Length: 340
Image (cartoon, rainbow, N blue to C red; front, side, top):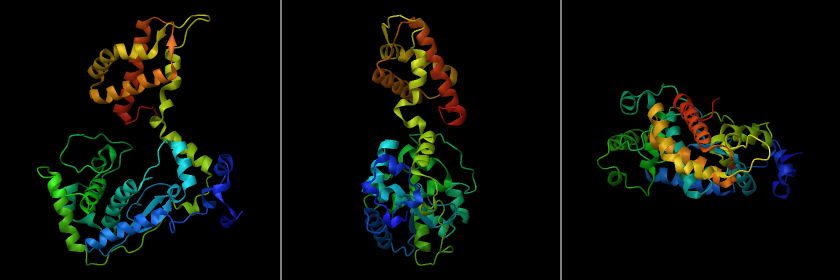
């Protein structure tokens, strides 16, 4: 079936999931994304920046390595797909005008970095670090550090020197942020001043790399929406409320048929939360706020599932403690609670 013959608004969920992404009749033109991109270009014009990164629909938010182009998730180009993304992933990354603009400014920082090869400059490396540094699968951030700007969630500037530059550029470009006031007294202000200086140097110059290759372009993706979300949900499993369900049901399961559950799982976790937190922190060396967030998620899930057991409380506490310690050790060594 040709793209022009497909009306995704008239399809039910099963029919939609069976479509290949390349079959979806999608375009940036005529959607709310076009207005966001036009706003981005206006902000660049206000700073006398002649370079305007081209945008295309991709599988996710990205600027391909060393390519001065911006990929925008294909699902943002149609309200039906945004609704499906919300159902499948519980959130729609960049799904509001404000959020979309934050991500566009961030990706533009990457695009300008690549277009002018700023990362090759000695001072760039001195300020942000080596561009050649390997990306880790995950990263550990310092939430109170004043060496980095705060823009995207999870203190993303601390992920990699390239991300640090992109986040700094995004804050500098945002017309609603008075960065000189907001970051006064922070070491990060030196990075912002550097961005201002380097943009002043390049703004009237043609980019060294004028065109970029559009990787992971939606129009070429042969996988179905069903396969796309199966993979995406697996990768992001820890972000779903049911991540702990199977293990919690095992921990609180009654051992003998006919036993009457009398012990509420949520009550046990709440009653011994401080004890478990302190013991796990002591023996793993992990920060208490990370363990606390994990225990809070487990408590909420126990309450939602209304889990109860007939097992002895001391045994349940022991298993919960071991479970939490195992998750934390996985996190310490891999950056993920789930062992790959």
